[in-house]
Image (tube, rainbow, N blue to C red):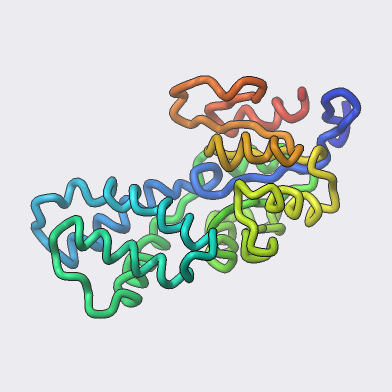
Length: 240
C-alpha cells in the first residue's frame, strides 16, 4: 500500500490535520507554569497559589468560546479572564489588564515545548498533505509551530481567523481546512485530543478523525480509533 493509498472503502486518506494545543504542543504544562509564575509575582504568598493553574484553566474555554462566537473581541476575552481570576482570588485587578495579560503571555511563550512524540509522528506521515487546524489566534499558533520546530512539514496552519471566522466545531471550519489542503473532507484525517472539536465535530463534516487520549482514561466514542501516543499514528493512518 502506497503512502497515498490509505483508505476506508473507496475513499483514500490524502491529508492529515493535527490539532496543536494538547496534541503537538504541551499547552497545559506551559499555561500552568506561566500563570503560577504570574500569580506569584502579582500576589506573592497568596494562600490559594497552588490552585491558580486549575482556576486559570477553567476560565479558558468559556471566554475563548465567547470570542469564537463573536460575542467579544480577542482583547476583551483576555481582559475578562484576568479580571475573573483576580476576582476569584479576592485580589485587586491590575490597572492595565492588557499589560497583565501580556505578562502572562510572555511567560507562557517561554514554556512552549512539543510533546516528545510529535516530531517523529509528523515525519512518519511525510507522504501526505499535512497541516494544523487549531482554535487559537493565527499569529500565535504559527509562532508555536515555529518554536517547536515543525514549521517545515507543517507549513499550513489554519485557524478560524483565516477560515472565515469559523472555529472548531463549526462544520465550515473542517470543510474550509480540507479545501485549504486541496482535498475533500472525507480525504482528510484530523488528529486531536478534544472529543467534541477534533473527533465528533470533524465527523459531522465528513472528515475522518482519530482521538489522541494521552491520559488513556476512557475509550473513544463509538466508531473512532483512539491512540494514547502520537507514536502510534503513522502505522494507524497507513492501516485505516
